[in-house]
Length: 275
Image 1 (cartoon, one colour):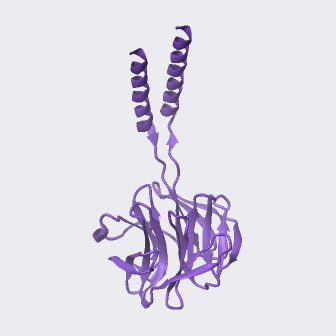
Image 2 (cartoon, one colour; image 1 turned 135 degrees about the horizontal axis):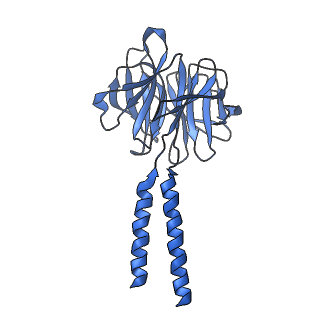
Image 3 (cartoon, helix red, strand yellow; image 1 turned 120 degrees about the vertical axis):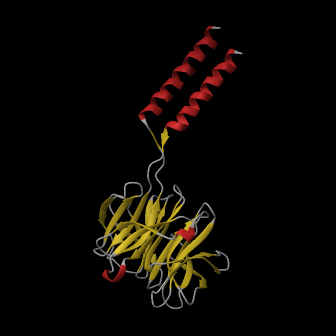
């Protein structure tokens, strides 16, 4: 009986541990027109310059690779591996795609890349060799941002028509490449899309009117009719958007609780030993 009471206490304390754990904000990565890589805290909106990346290109895709802890960037016919701490790029290989506009990594570790021309194709791309495999044409609208929505297990893209008059959020079938319109968005010239798995949000990068400065918008997948909400105004043009989830970090109270768990375990072992 005493053993079960002890286990009950342990479970109760474990529950306290779970509630005392704080989830940190995730990080968004984007490139500015001067070639700098920037990190954006999704809670505070604090902008931090990481370092110099490859030369800025208006058409580029950015994605975070959680297994290798790196950024992937597709631009100017190349696939690049980028250090998340310094921004230093390393070329993986040549893709042969001149104007990349979106990059997304799904739950099967398959990487997708979209291009603006010709006929707005989407490919899968090998992360070791940069070899591409054609998936589909989107024809009338170019996909200028790609993201994998892990909550709904779907590839999503933000499209732009030829005269930049409107944007659409679409889902993309990863087998056939067919698209389904999810929402029309009042955005001109979108340049990035990322899915936030911690907050269940879409983050969108788009131009803010004729000055061509970029804005960061958030979009609720469960309330798409509400449209995008602007949360940050950049002082320059930015391109590509990738999301990095940060693991929860225990607060000091949690550490103290774990110390208490250790003490309880030690007492239990001594009681068993002493009979």
